[in-house]
Length: 100
Image (cartoon, rainbow, N blue to C red; front, side):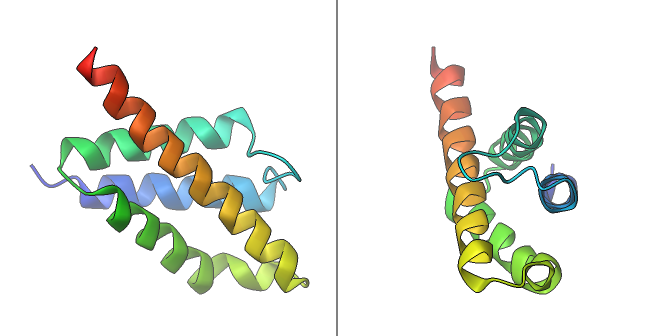
């Protein structure tokens, strides 16, 4: 079953929450953003979407919709890096959990 629209919507919701609420702090995204990313990754993995494709989707959404919200390119890049890291951690934490 193709859940690509579902995981894509969850990614956008996580990015909305992160940027609108400034949840992408200096250190880590807030728990609610991490939870949305984990849900998106769970759906993506269930549909055999590789982690690389999920990361590309995050980066594409960021450039298209969110990057302009930051006046400082360095801060924008840092925020995106934190979100990508959180997504990769969620993707592979879910993968490890399902093997136990």
